[in-house]
Length: 493
Ligand SMILES: *Cc1c(COP(=O)(O)O)cnc(C)c1O
Image (cartoon, rainbow, N blue to C red; front, side, top):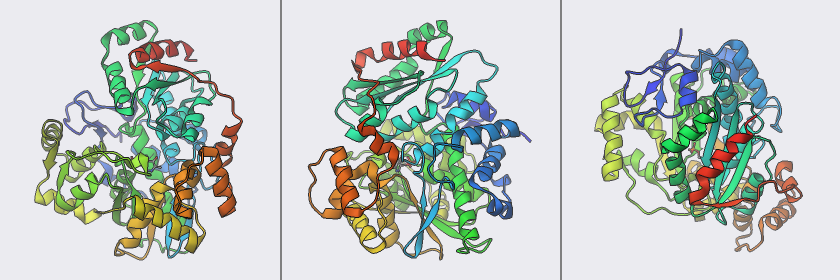
């Protein structure tokens, strides 16, 4: 049986998963989705006997069934075979009476590696038979850029260009990007702020003259951001694999329910948990944890999505988001595929800045989803208590979810918090949380101090940055960004 994907806003154009992965976003602005998730129940007994790699093959071949088993096997090996510093890939550990699923053992120490190590593999296979090259263009405020660079480096036929705002990312984040090796990668700082750069990237995608120039170089543009279905599907894997690990450890008996607490920004991570539930995982509840950019917290309680509010900079920057794109997919699924309704909501969001879902839809949403929020003070407190009580060092994003979990009434015996970054990626803020004092140290000094006071070690990939050669010192202006992309296309292998 072949699974087809179509836009959340219309059903008349059906695509295979390969086409959906290459296209990224539907031409009508909707996101690609399939209608048969609930018919794709996985056999939990087999899941529990499987390794992470085997579960990755099982989930991917179920959702992306136009790939051959051999293609899937190669993609899984290429994505997770090396580059993770844990054999379990996403190991689960205890956290007091609960559990913590560690998603940051990949090459950039953040959970985005799980998807961004896989997406380039899926794209490479999807473009076979098409002689055109692909150029990925990404604007980043920090984490995504490095994870995308690490995933796409040296992938034949695909190039990657990453733009970041000059002076507005952390020392470690900047070094992670400007030291990236690979002959097909291009990284440039831009004089401007993140929103201006993001807007210019959108202009680049809409620039017909540039598209024609690139077509003459046999290249098309694409994006690696989290609306691509090829980034979402790999994230379903670790929900099933977490269950397998818990059953094998004796914490769960096959069939028992569990619940997840998920630090949320663009709603990709937690949506993958809903996919897993539809595919038969006994998920009692998915709790969305927000920082003070609490648009989802309000939405899940009231059914009103309202982005007309101020944007707050927090110590969990990857969750500083006011428009969570992947929510559109959830609303499509909850409304049993009502494209017209989804289009209307999204138009209202664009035109008026808000929409309100029906009571019926809200009730259905609340059956599965709960929400909580933590401000920076509560986030720091969670880092401090987790270290004091458990001797476990957590990062600022994980801490938002831990804080929410500690405040929440349990829905079942087994509670799992998703840990999305290694604490050393945010050394300065973690150090401040532990010491209770403002920290004026630079990135590596804070890393050293954190190692000293906790007697733990920073991931090698982060400490190695101290001596890594700077390969991408370039700085450009907003107006030059299209030229940068155009000349980067010459580097594609
Ligand atoms: C991206 C990110 C998140 C948010 O994930 P979404 O899929 O956007 O909800 C949380 N924590 C970290 C560390 C991240 O990089």
